[in-house]
Image 1 (cartoon, rainbow, N blue to C red):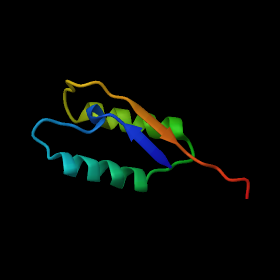
Image 2 (image 1 turned 90 degrees about the horizontal axis):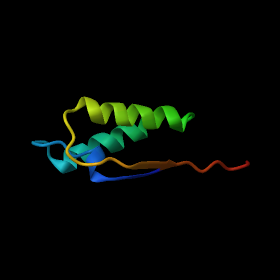
Image 3 (image 1 turned 45 degrees about the vertical axis):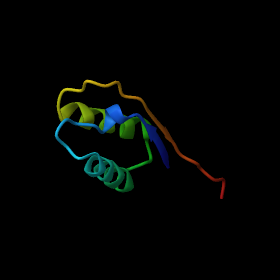
Image 4 (image 1 turned 90 degrees about the vertical axis):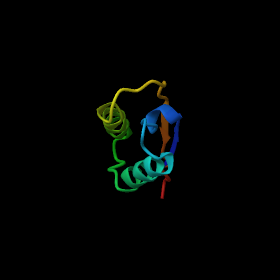
Amino acid sequence: MLAFYTDGLIETPGVDLDDSIAHLAHHLAHADDRDLDLLIDDLLRKARATGQRTDDVALLVLQYESDR
């Protein structure tokens, strides 16, 4: 899985940026990636729950599926 995102997804005033990135990486590492739409909805819902955002949010999640 590969995730591209803007800083609006993870930046929260008063929270260290490295901690926010680590939290996102942990969440992605343990996420159920069988349904990317649900995963994206969950990430956006968590971003809204952490406080008021002053920046835009863009998120693109890609997953490679081999035929093996």
